[in-house]
Length: 163
Image (cartoon, rainbow, N blue to C red; front, side, top):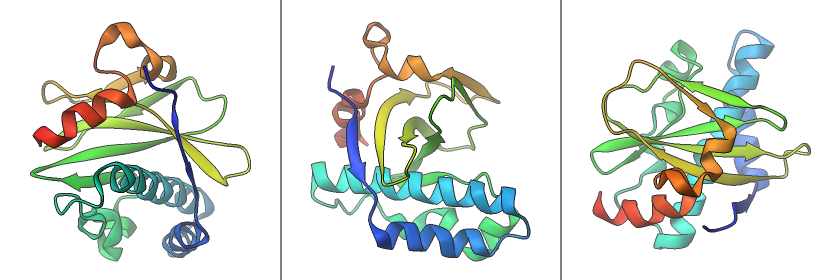
């Protein structure tokens, strides 16, 4: 199993996330939009670094990049890939579980661990969604579980070229 992939957060990524967050009508919504935006950008950057910015991953196709959508739903954390989406889920330090309600077309969940100073994140792992689910609660430790097969970031890179 590969070690978690660290992605430094650029000032541009943080500025974009702050801009999106500032549009929200309260601090808690703004915080969620900030975390989701940075998580999406980090997964996009990781895929770009490995695959050389493939045409089947378009950051601007994320619903988060549409003001009307992000004002309506602060839980957006989608990164369109091919005909589906990856859910880029922010995980804070000391957080033990994450609950996701996958939209239709969701292919998998990528855990993005934030560090205390918010200057970089780590791609924890990949959890492939095998069937449409109403709701999934993942233990953060599951992203590191090599025995499960699908639940590590290395699996994402084996799976993506097939999309």
